[in-house]
Image: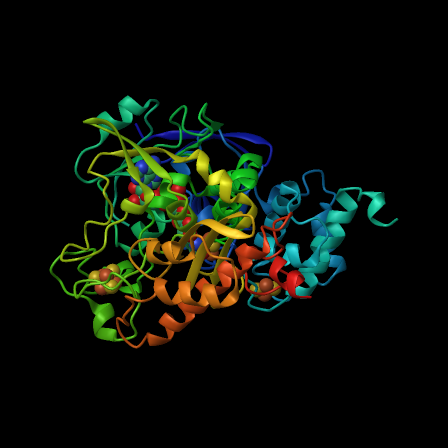
Length: 165
Length: 350
Ligand SMILES: Cc1cc2nc3c(=O)[nH]c(=O)nc-3n(C[C@H](O)[C@H](O)[C@H](O)COP(=O)(O)OP(=O)(O)OC[C@H]3O[C@@H](n4cnc5c(N)ncnc54)[C@H](O)[C@@H]3O)c2cc1C
Ligand code: SF4
Ligand code: FES
Ligand code: FES
């Protein structure tokens, strides 16, 4: 009997049989579950294109063995606009022209969602750039990405008013 | 990647019993999965320890020491209020390492045990005494050099961990459990210099498991003047070229006690005890810090064309001491451990 894992994948309960312990979460998504939105850039933790949320935290799916994830809740780019309405981060990326070729974009967006949930950067551009440094963009859309994360942060978290006073 | 057996034990006892030659522990996987892909590591059995109970806590012990479970994720440790209060340079070093995604996965135990980033070590077709004893050292052949302290003819690699540098400076202790029982290893003695046996990387015996890391209570005495400084090719998401953790306990305007460790210069985090002795009892000033940095690098030698690194390490060390003297910033800098941006030191000089 091959081992199996149970996941909640983009809100849906899934039982997945795995005949090979070497399968990473990235390859599971792309090659076995027909979810190619998560991208493979380096496959070594060096680019961030494969970023997904595991139990609400952003991680590199290329370095995560699928078998370790029994019981986990996974969100990929395909699951972000669950009810057909774009997520505020997706809206903000479009609004701010935060991509060119788009290859890094799913990873950038998932990373931004994770960063905003961490509450680490607020809307400080320097902290956003630092917090997003795990996502490389070969097209150098960094300026738009920073603006998009700033916008999305503001629309998702009401800012403290005393800062303006 | 070579095929392996995968198991996920539910207790520490089961995990220790499952270990056998050819088996490895799996923490966050951010280092070992990468090395299994390149073929540098080819385990027969992968023991996932992330479900083990009781290893994910951060607690303050009755004597004031802080005990950190080996499965605590790097990001959770960096964000923990006790760490910010008692050992801010540990948080700064963690946040200067890797990326937000990697820190969410990386564990305390895995960070301590991460392997060198030497490119020849990662490539199983290269000659490497550390990975395959007796095959030679392609890095030495290439001639660029890596370590500047404590290297040998057999291996010139450096330890890449940022986290371990302040741990060594603060006299942290690694708690270990193995088939023979429990024991403790000071962080400063945990990683081994290469000598003739670079394949022996740490004092951990086969089958032993890191359970936690303990920061002694006296670490708190340095919290007001403690900084980690890291120089790298780019400001973030890059390993250190040189780094330094500097901490001062000031009393009446003098340095009562100093702690200093250097990163990325040797196969272990390099505690600079001679420099610490030179600093003790003195009034802090730039000339003193320059002399301390000089002392810290007194034994340095290039391991190839990297004499530049001795200079860089010296300056990194002196600057980290100046930053520590200027005071730990109230808030984590936007660019942790960076020589750029608005550091407390910049404000002090403004
Ligand atoms: C692109 C990239 C950039 C990075 N940049 C930095 C950086 O700038 N600074 C930095 O410090 N690090 C950096 N890292 C390294 C990162 O910090 C390590 O990969 C991570 O800390 C390893 O932790 P892990 O839990 O994922 O370990 P794993 O990959 O799970 O394991 C690593 C090793 O530790 C052993 N191990 C794990 N847990 C235990 C235990 N409890 N007891 C005994 N042995 C154990 C494993 O068997 C394995 O040999 C980077 C990594 C990547 C991929
Ligand atoms: S420096 Fe050390 S790790 Fe690198 S190739 Fe030589 S022996 Fe291997
Ligand atoms: S594909 Fe995972 S980090 Fe590049
Ligand atoms: S948009 Fe092309 S890589 Fe980022």
